[in-house]
Length: 242
Image (cartoon, rainbow, N blue to C red; front, side, top):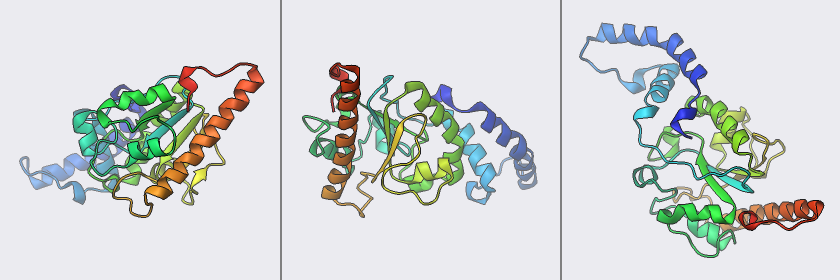
């Protein structure tokens, strides 16, 4: 998410509702005593997180209008944010899985992440704030980022979007029982998928299981492109390659 797309209304709403209590707490504890983030109510924590986004080092999107597929992570990892390249963590399996699943002709290095656009794929995250683990994000922080993220997807209009893990879509949609694979409802106008997170911390899915899940998406997206091309009576262009 670009900093300019941070939703202004939700931030103002939480600012107005939570800041008076926050100031009162600060006054009681003394002007020089910091307030513990963990001691704050959930709305205070969300307010602090959203108002501090501009000071965080974040990760630029790799997006173009009308891509066949966008992969959506929950938020950047610390190494990805510090290097400015997606899935740069040493244990992250994304680029290896992408190659083995047939998305790319070779295994892309994180520093060459822009190459993924040549294969008709984009990269983005729901929450811009980097963390060491996605579990450090609160559900409320993801919900607050959800509206702006949905608008971004509507703006770029990909044909498919793949969420990496269930956490983000569950928080944004308010649905607890998210299934793996294709979703019934579209997201931002795009056909939605939920794939296992390729993080090395996700030990529930080994490499073979990840490759199988990602390959299913590639085959489905490629099939949809062929059907659309046949309906138009034309072949797809270079950017539509998957």
